[in-house]
Length: 204
Image (spheres, rainbow, N blue to C red):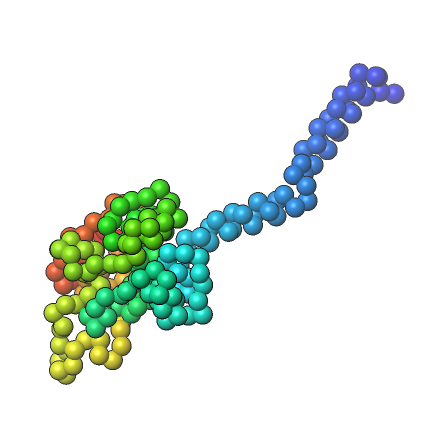
């Protein structure tokens, strides 16, 4: 027969085991925590139907661009000179706002994407300037209107998307290469010649 002291030790061990298996937060705690984690992880995922400056969702990219024009005054300039499709450019604008928390127009860096959105809507900075000397957006345009061998200007039959080069790079139709970057670095614009590598930004 077990002594009284041995029985107390057995009971204490059993109690500790039961407590360790107890879900203190209740049956929905783990699920709620998981949902919150998933929701926060989806915040920065690019969605071509979501406005860059507010939470409004449109049916498609065209309607989204129309919303951003009417509600926020956002105009994609020089459409005739774009060397990428509109969705690719909008995806990059999304990166600037959500990854770098930066104003598209003046480049000021905020603490959160929401703060960057508030800054842009409050200052009237829901726009891009591809003609400024050091504009990073110049790399998405060809203002010299390159002519193909058949005499037609590039882009007359539609905008080109990225061309796959390697798993971690994409090449713009101009020959410039956008490299995937595993670590966040400070972005900056530099003058580029055709074929030079752009390692200052990425979006995948």
